Length: 70
Image (cartoon, rainbow, N blue to C red; front, side):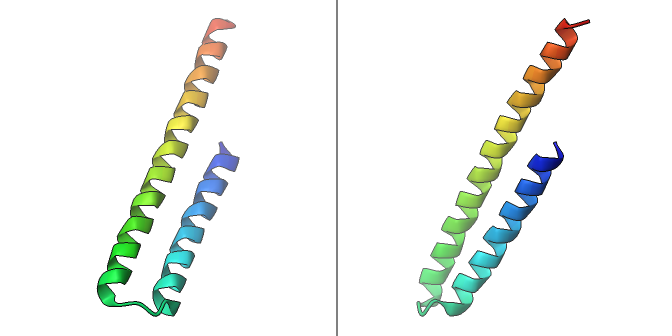
């Protein structure tokens, strides 16, 4: 569980740093930057949802395995 949390924290930090860097260094109009920021945010949310779902499935499977071994 600690590895998953560490990975998620690193992924979120990477997304934030990458997004801010892109916003500051990209020569584009304000509308383009907003659209790109929204797209990146949606992608990050989707990745987080997938990671949450995968972790939940793993934990449920482990719980069922432990419950069955009693």
